[in-house]
View 1 (cartoon, rainbow, N blue to C red):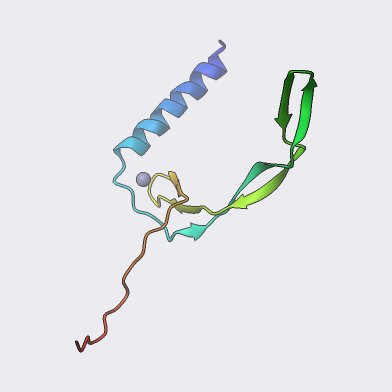
View 2: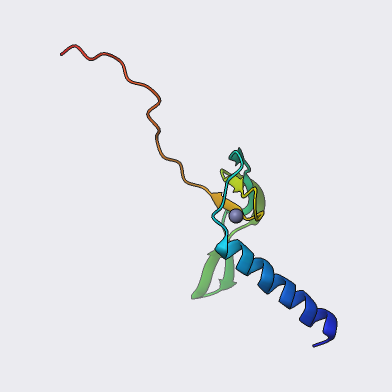
Length: 94
Ligand SMILES: [Zn+2]
């Protein structure tokens, strides 16, 4: 390990400490889909009794994801989950 690597590791450690102590103030959440590889099709592989199937290939698919970034420390936080939010109520005559 050289001095440069030691220096960078110390920087990373300091930055991680700063992020872990931060009380996080999040910027507005934005939609930030993630590109992932997804397998498609099936092709037989092997021979005789030692046969199995593999994907014919892979293609890129967009997976829903949302991101928020802390204004103070720059931490990026991702989620692919959503929950319902009730925005208003209406009179209910029953
Ligand atoms: Zn923060």
